View 1 (cartoon, rainbow, N blue to C red):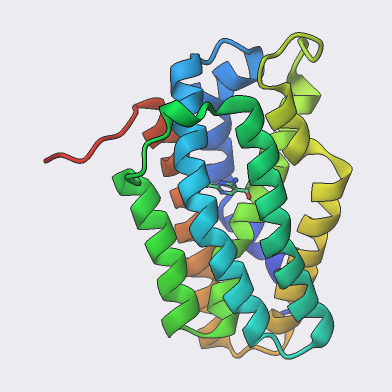
View 2: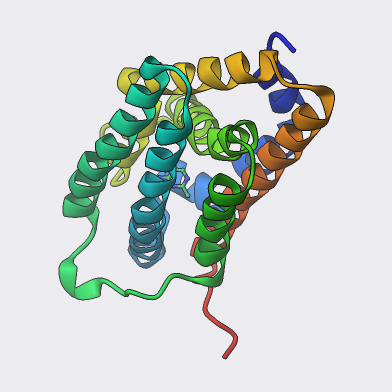
Amino acid sequence: MQDWYKLAREQTDYILEAIKEQSFIKELMNGTLSTEVFQFYINQDAMYLAEYKKVLAAIGVKCEYADDTQFFLDSATGIINVENALHQIFLKDNQLVHEPSPTCELYTSYLTRMVANHSLEEALAAVLPCFTIYKEIGDYIQANQTNKADNPYQDWIDTYGGEAFAASVNNAIAITNKYAANAPVNVLKRMESAFEKASKLEWMFWDSAYNKEAWKI
Ligand SMILES: Cc1ncc(CO)c(N)n1
């Protein structure tokens, strides 16, 4: 499989299209998303990223090539900087909650399970949508918005639509493709499922933020 990502991207196009239709994304783009919803999102995302960076570090440790290990460890530490910057802009300490929502818990637990109990190939496929979907949505918003000068969420948009993130996303795709190139068919199938599952979880994460998802009990 030479360009595994191309296939995975095509198979999950319906999810990306659905994300573009989400109220969260539409209102983020036109700047009307309520501060309360965005704060809920950033707060949950802080808890998500705290686990996600550990997942990236664990993947880095499992990689065979030094450059790939370096990339994932750099990405893990890079997240700490992004977190601090975005949270300083958007999150006030006194508004922090410390309990992950059901969807946040589901997503971080899923990724942690993939890296702990499954093959490196599957774990790579499971984390890839975190890179590619944010990149696509960042680019999509930048290309379609008409309010760059006065969108209150522009810093967030530019974090994921920017050049630095693009380089990182391309690297993550290239590494995943490299492992896929040597993987047998059964592993490729598992990778496709993991990529699709994680893509759905990205949709769910924005949906859960928009609805300020709570535990049922
Ligand atoms: C839920 C989620 N997925 C991906 C990213 C991008 O790193 C993020 N900040 N949050």
